Length: 528
Image 1 (spheres, one colour):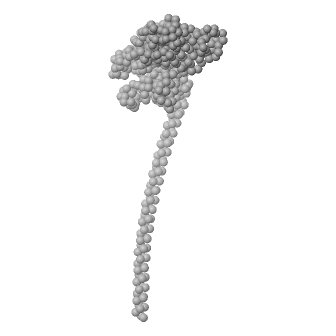
Image 2 (image 1 turned 120 degrees about the vertical axis):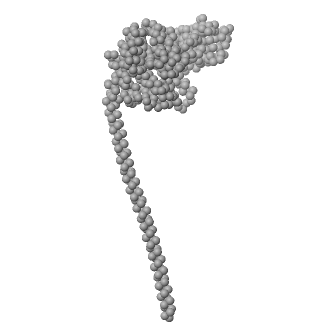
Image 3 (image 1 turned 180 degrees about the vertical axis):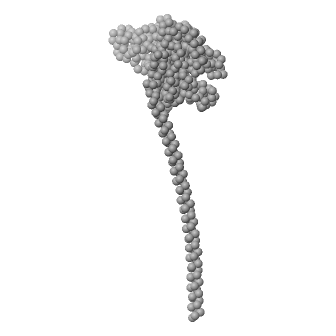
């Protein structure tokens, strides 16, 4: 019994011992695990503390940067507000004309002018401040390394003007240089070469102040052009803009030329006639040369907007590219194709042929550049004469020869040429909207093909409304009324106001012809 009790006690003791050992081991493991977690927690807490400290530092840095930006913006705003419209003035001799109201944001594009309001005041070397003319001619010129063409250009322009035309224009030579010695010497040479034009006020000579141009040293190179070329074209954009803004209040039209051209006889009257013959005021550019920026005519009232666009992107692209982009912005629909865009732009940019100006310079104003640019339309004989005509649907029964279409003749791009007509053939102009017309002119044949004329051909009109008091013999079964006929290849006449608006005009050929038919001029004379 004692033995059994002893064994039981021993068993209990062993059980207690092992239980205690297991508990002690478990407790130690637990204590170690708690220490590990606590250590990880403390490390996490430390990292969070450091992150918070770093964020606070960055927040303070950001706040400092924002304060600096606010201060800089405030300074710029105060500086801009201190340059009111009243202070932005153009000095022309003893006269002062204000910069256009819509152009006072010039400092946005040329911030280097802030605090230098004199940068907008041209140096007027010679001139009498002539205004109120029909055409203002702007000629920028710069110092060339090789040969100057300026004096020959001025001689050509003046020699082809009548006395009356010289009274109706002002020519502005803009010497786009800041070297005062060179500028003064050239101004004096021009004055000595053209004393009468200077004295009469038709010729003015100006130059920019030295502070007008920005620092070109950090200009960005684009489109694969060298730094020197980018600087040249960038300065050129500024020169054209400065000249346009100076010329703007002086006349009705502004003609942009370059300093190395010659002009055709009667160029001045041709420009005025073509401008006044436009049937609408929607056009932006009339082109009298196909080269670059030569012979481009603008309305003076459009110059502030145009110059503003040039200055907005003056560092980005050449002037002729910017001009095309300006047209695109005006009328092109991004959802339409390029052909549609070209048609829309053609309503704003209208070409006159043949060209009235020819480029004669060989040495470019860009140092080292040789350019033998020639306007191929300049020497062409006038085989056709363009006129602005109202929109119309065109059709003919004649067989057209090659590319000499009726559409091209109507828009003034080319003459119309067809094989020999037969009795009953016609040419029909159906206006998109009925028109009030003063008269008409159709000229057949040209200097190269003088015999290809229309003979025994009548001119008929289709009024929009029924007309009374017209002899029945002049009205055909379709309602067309005969109002004229071709004589010696030309049909020209007035259209009576009693006929009202006209829906269509038709040329009707009465007999067979042995020669081809060529029409070199089509002019629907609109009522003004």
